[in-house]
Image 1 (cartoon, rainbow, N blue to C red):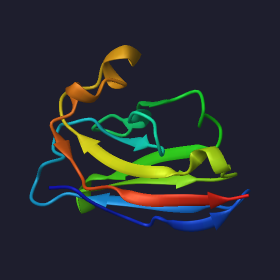
Image 2: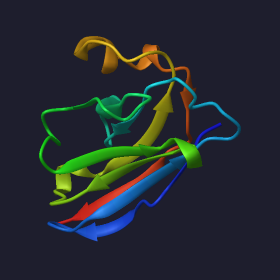
Image 3: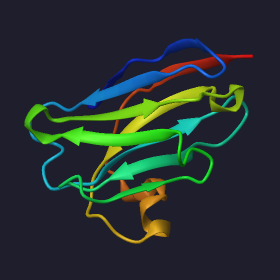
Image 4: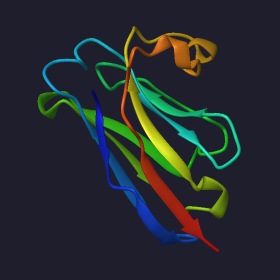
Length: 125
């Protein structure tokens, strides 16, 4: 239901910007965020933004390098990824649903009802 784009191959230290758009008004009043699944690992939380955009929360592994934002008029969220590392290689998934809340709640997959199919990000060393 959500459609991600912007993935690709980039060298270490490079940047990419992921986008996610939602049909209709799926994003309305919901938090929205990004998760990722690296090869051989479980899917993990990356970042989330509140409906109004005023609150954000990041995984420690990406804090200071990634920035999440949203444009509700376009029903879109973005993930600007800078200073990419090989360990950032993963399929990145957009997710949305439910209200904003405390960190443990925000980083739990089951608190998001809408998901995209994912976009591959590969960082070469």
